[in-house]
Length: 220
Image 1 (cartoon, rainbow, N blue to C red):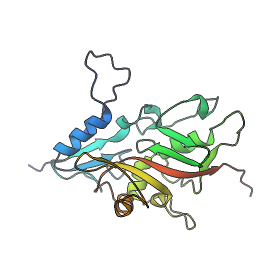
Image 2: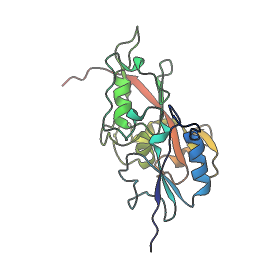
Image 3: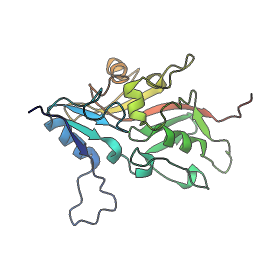
Image 4: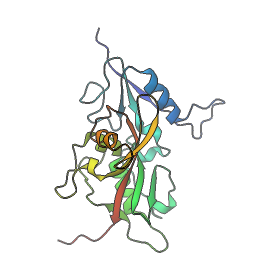
């Protein structure tokens, strides 16, 4: 009988009640990547799920990336993320990190586009009340993950700013060897270019750095 790829969920060890909590999601991912015949990342399961465009080969594994996030509400495991009334500043997470000086955001690949845009828009400090957004928000298919948007490169394309692959300044990925690498135009530029819109065939995207701008009013 034909074999299909199987889905593998990464189990977060946070607040685990067992006497022996599971290994960290990153360690689980490294084990799966090194042992499987073929590996693909599955975020929201749109074009990446079993028997679709970019699933793993027969006998391989589809990695459900939601477990890479510390906050499950930011992932495709939840239908919609709504920022708290106090703004994103009151919701601390290492899944999304804003650098206000450099106007960049580091976001894990497991975060959905909708959650990222909501988090940025609701970001407030004592001296900053406008929130942030992307140069081209690319709100088409906001339910997909940031990793899927970058690796797929098929949605939210702008004539002036390009698609999701063009938004990436820097990326962190796990290669087939289990090695975690950080790539950009300066560091391993060929791999940096290939990972974007690479359908996770060269590595599993862990996080990306994106340029952000101050959110402004829209006038008709």
